[in-house]
Amino acid sequence: MTVSSCSPSGDCPLRPRLQLLLYPPAGSPTNRTGLLLLGRRMMLNDEWTIMNNSSSELDSKRPNKYKRCCTFLLWSVIVLLVIAAIVMATLTVLHLTQYPLPFISSNRGGVSTPAISTITKDSGALVTISRVTDREPVSVFLDPNCPDFSEHFLRWEALQSSLLRTLTNHNADEWKERGAFQKLGDDLKVLTGHAHNLRLETDSLKRGQGVLDQRMDRLQSEQSRVIQVLSDSHSAVLKLAESFSDSLLGLKREAESLRRLKSELSRDLTQTAVQPRDCSNIVASGVSQDGVYSVFPTHDPDGFMVYCDMSTDGGGWTVIQRREDGSVNFFRGWEAYRDGFGITTGEHWLGLQRIYALTRSGGFELRIDMADFDNATAFALYSDFSVGRDSVNPEEDGYPLTVDGYSGTAGDSLLKHSGMRFTTKDRDQDQSENNCAAYYQGAWWYRNCHTSNLNGQYLRGGHASYADGVEWSSWTGWQYSLRFTEMKIRPRKPES
Image (cartoon, rainbow, N blue to C red; front, side, top):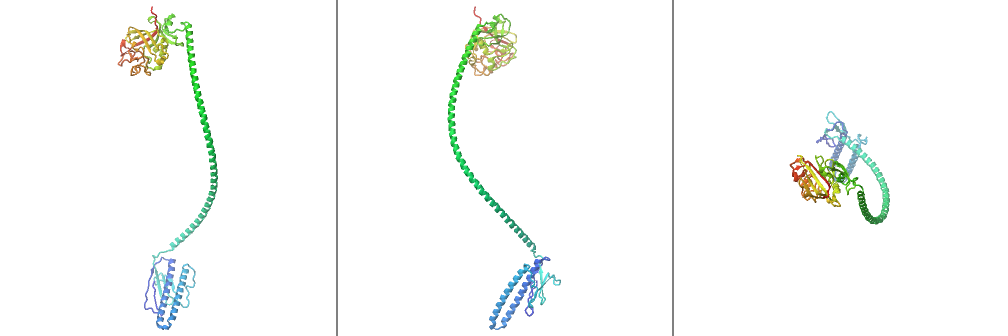
């Protein structure tokens, strides 16, 4: 842009010029509006300069008497100029707001109006501003790098629209929230009423619970009293039942003793041939065949089966033990030796309880026949033999052995065991620190420990182990297991 300043007479001795180079983008409406405003301001500045110069010349020619009038006129002009500036500012604002102003391009009172043209080919400027009177052009060059604020305006408008929509939605949400809050308030009032009712019901339940607790305390005290009465009654009943049980046991013992007495009396009245006490009664009745027979000892009226030897030394022997082939295991516990085991016609043990039933009154003799694996034989005879003699409870006493009066060919290996109780692997009744039955693999009337072990292991002759076979030490020592042994008893014959 080039701005020229001239005097009112039209002389322009000095022409200072101001060039403003602006290069707007092609077809920008915003930059064109700015150019119009800029041209109008420049015209106002020119007029103001001319008027100031004219006032200065007039003031220098007039006399002093006119100074007051000039001052008044000057202030009037200044006020008018201020009013004109305000009007121009207003017009400028209206123009910027695109308010239609048809009188801007007209000339009033012969005052020249600047003419604005765009894209003049001779000057090369994008916009040219000139006065109508002198047609002196004022060229305005726009910088093409001048920023275009249209996009910013569009963005601001979009932002404004977004803000309006947001405020509208926010107001709607506020109304909704107010409605929800109001509903919640109503619900809270209802819940408060329910809570009050529940509190009243709770107080009522607490009072009822207090009454129930009192009743429960009374019931518990009554229950304790009833339990005490029942406990006393139960103790009395238990004592009565215990005394009654003792009475029943006493009566049972009396009945059992009476039954035994009756059995003994009836047995004494019957013929001995019908119910023999042992094998001697059978041989006395004329039977001489070896075999199995039933005997009915005095203290065991029910009887049991035994093997009778009717040929050795006059016969009548009741066999109580036999070893001959090792077919039966003799390393057993207490109950087996008490009740007996094995096969009567082969290897067997008659049983301590049955031996006690036969010999409890004494008067029996014992014969032991034995043989080795070289078919050598020997025997040992004892004139006095019994098990549990005169014992009321033989099992508790351990079925003690009584033996005396040795004679025979095998040597005595039993007298040292007389008076000893019977010992098994699960019932130690010997005088040794160890269980002799467990240590020597047998069951016998051990002392500490033995000189004979006829219920030991069947080791078939000589063996490396010590004294744990079928041993009779006085004949074969402690490391020879016999092939055959047989223990048998019969009533001792009266001396002639």
